[in-house]
Length: 468
Image (cartoon, rainbow, N blue to C red; front, side, top):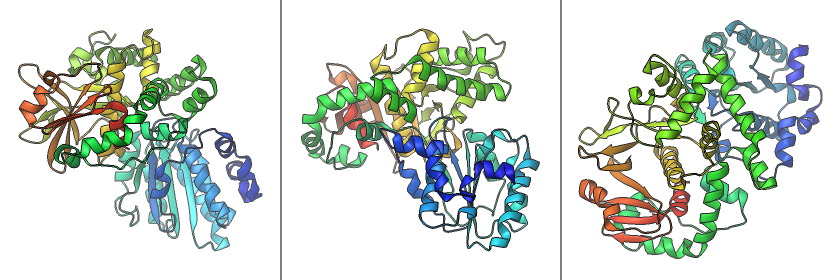
């Protein structure tokens, strides 16, 4: 039991949770980000939750905050079990952990137990240990929360627990870095009374753009400055914290994040050299449709399948999104045509830029395009917990003559095209493809509001706020 006590010091002293390094760092933080996902868990029922997201996004901090809240609400300290699975080699050890805690807590007759296993996706076939424990009846009056940074491991593990997840309808949760709206809230004193509006209202209600402009127009210079900051630092809490303190990102913080990504790939016996080359190659094509074969052209590997594997691993780790071509008639993606690749957060874009020797925000328009694409995915994709490589609600479109629409969202069974034109002058030619092909659409601009029938123009920072 000594090993368990190391991870659960509140068993001996409930106040020890206050000195936990994650809780302490959170309490001393300038931002104290409490993501909305905290409200999506019900710890009063039998359930097997998964929480996934990229490394260093704050999953462990979130877990410790939940434990802190349970302790402060009067839950018996020994009814709460936490363990980090970083060094656990296999399923037998997972089962033994659960068994040990079961034997320790069973005589205490708790009304409910809470079991938190952190970074369980690092353990191959972890789900079999959990399945066996639940089949033995150990899941009764118990709420489980398992975290991991790999969507494919967590997904497969969760799918192998049929009928054992409890009655909660959506047990799989995702924690992603702060979006632009959260960044504005945490990194400024700007208070907006922005009335949210739907895509349908934007496109169909004539006065909606006027109303939106009246609410945000006066703040647009400040919002534009905040957007530039967001595109520089991204939404990972540690990076945001340093940016607020120092006004920039140090090489140390970039190296910390890149080391974590690199080590995760090395744990699954992947090459750090190929990883670096893939990141640089994805940066170089900047959202341009590409086949797997063309993506592999500058990477030192004899097979494009290797580049595809690395790219899909990045997507499964929530570090990059892969968008597919839209077949309009079928309302489905066509996986045989070129794909578009976007890093999931500006910080990952900065990491790739550093490896390529390219200055941060060398092309602000491309950075805005990536932010818009990722925000659309976060807003409309229903199965984001499966990673960012199988997007089913956000696509791109391109004609046989090469005319392209950056993004097309399938929303309420209708297509909503979104084109990014982050430039000083806007003309009808900038949205002619949307108008001709879809009859409507949203043009994301630098600073211009306008309406042309069912084509509306919205400045980028305002549009990103609407996608909160």
